[in-house]
Amino acid sequence: MIASLKFSKLTLGTVAPQFTGVSILENESGPNGITMELEMQWDGNPKIVLDIKTLLGVALPIEVKNVGFTGVFRLIFKPLVDEFPCFGALSYSLREKKGLDFTLKVIGGELTSIPGISDAIEETILDAIEDSITWPVRKIIPILPGDYSDLELKPVGTLDVKLVQAKDLSNKDLIGKSDPYAVVFIRPLPNKTKKTKTISNSLNPIWNEHFEFMVEDVSTQHLTVRVFDDEGVGSSQLIGAAQVPLHELEPGKVKDIWLKLVKDLVVQRDTKNRGQVQVELLYCPLGKESGFKNPFNANFSLTILEKALKPESEDSDATDVKSSQSPKKKDVIVRGVLSVTVVAAEDLPAVDFMGKADPFVVITLKKSESKSKTRVVPDSLNPVWNQTFDFVVEDALHDLLILEVWDHDKFGKDKIGRVIMTLTRVMLEGEFQEWFTLDGAKSGKLCIHLKWTPRLKLRDAS
Image (tube, rainbow, N blue to C red; front, side, top):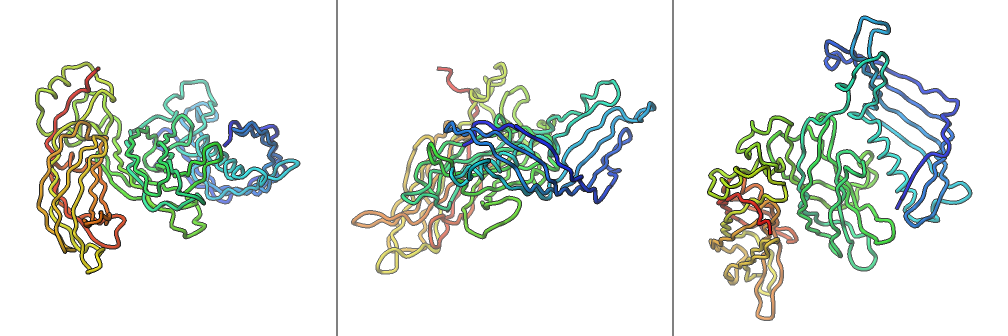
């Protein structure tokens, strides 16, 4: 929507900010520095004019008015020295943005003349503040000559994100269904933001895309997921957003969670159901990969997720990988045999006139498009199959297992519900059995037993 944004005028006005509290953080200061936090409130009268150019080539002068801000600034005086003023450098950062309000006005016009432009400008301004000055980003001002590179922002870990799917998204289209895509980031810089492909005409999209991010401060940073409806040449509409604080992740452990989408991550403005997104997350502190259970060989140039999924036993293919010289991420796959046992289902909804169903299950591996199906169990809402199917999986890290329960009928078939899962858990645990709730069904659950026999190999260079 916005091609460029720059300041054409910036004055802070005549109203000074008020500092309402000061604290010294002894536990974060260390022996060679002082960390101070200042609570600030500012209801200013600045003169701010932005030059906006849209993707459609329209130039707009935008005035930012009625600015109100409350937050906490962090000052770090480090290192402490004997020479006046007793510290070598000053670092400052916005530790917490409690509130930021402003209004936008087109000089000589109305924002409503271009649908979506106001939200896009507001989002751009907030993202710029988030990434340019909000902690852990900090600005360093040298006071005395010296090397202060140790104060700069540095990575402390890696976050692997698998954005699996979304369900029950709110529909933004008047005709048909939304065309959703997702944007994922820790810091909202364009070169650090990842975007999925667009799934056309779907409120239950399956992406199954994998991204990797650097983490600078696991205690304060969070992963943000925003889901949009792609409107083509027009402005994409936000369906909803969700966040995960990184401090909730256990290092070296894969966390599979469903996140509820909301309109505003700061203030919940409505209670509308906007859907959910499923993500798999794995955080790994730098330098500690080898301390986790079943890590890959440290010489492999793999994602952290791939390192966590090392097979218990290695065959000749795995030996060949060890002897190779640091293969690229895209050159390594995890392959093996997946044994799927469809055990039973319970409490299926009645779909026949007689209050029964004739259920069967279709098992699909999405990437390889391999399919199998169980036998039909007639006149049952609690069928038992106990049938096992073996699939050769060529790229387990990026495949999906889909189990769809259908009702068999002489004149066709009706879908009852489905279960979708990645292969991450079975690769980590080797084998498990569990009941899964059927998505898209009024009731019912499906019992599945999975077993994984792994092999690690390089992709065919051809």
